[in-house]
Image (tube, rainbow, N blue to C red; front, side):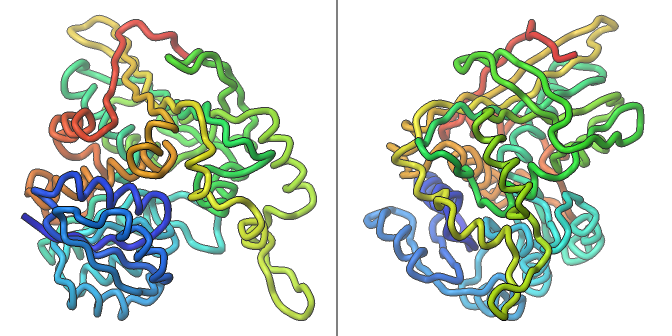
Length: 399
């Protein structure tokens, strides 16, 4: 049916490629492109004999002209961006120049400012609309599935949604004293930034990890959860009408936070350049180089993730509560696609979003977040492609 250009060759990209090949009726041909061609070839070699045709290419995603050239050469129906968030805008520019639909999993973040904000990508709405192409933003898990969960709840179970708590729990154990489950630079920037949540039509900012709770998660048990800011809060605060409060929580172990605090105290999480032996280096980028590669964690990680949305609102004039979530097993993910559950839960939705764009189900001119489309086909595909969801109408609520 269609062709996809997949930019990136990390753990998430590997999952996207595997899942595109499983969905070969939609993805007849794909091209894996990255700055490091060897990584693309390694992914391709895991899928020899696939019914989806696979080719590889070298590309610098920071170079719009180079991306344009690759798009013109391969002629994809959609570009799936699973490179770094810093590269979103250069890839969007390339899609605009070539008239090709765009899908990503995380919003643009300037390299020198650790800040989640959609304003840079939302500024492309008119340009994409005039070009007649679609940009689907944040089609990972969070952002991504969490937005679809909220849209599904809004469509089927609520007349008004007032409160949303998104809880992202990883109970996996990789055996290292300290490692991050996805790109260390992005992960640590996210965690060390100020917290923020939306309440009563305003944003309330907190110190990093200043608000803590405990939540008993299905199949995982009680975990410490910390309030963070996450990009889907910004779009859901706009697109879920009647919302009074929306928060995002993530689990961290005491051991993880102790290591992070020490690294932060000695300046290793800084993004300000310093001079070392006559050259400029960024401490966080150096730390990334010495930490375990997240792509290497798959064979060593055991345990499960649980990510979902706890929702409160009104139906037929009466209060209603609802909890929709997915539990993903690290070891099962690795058996299937050679990646741990963090990459799996991001890569599967990226493929699903791209497939809905290719099929024309989620296709209209402009720039959109996932919750702006009909959630039902996405929810159906989650069950089909490895991220089955569960729901409860009597969840424990967060204060």
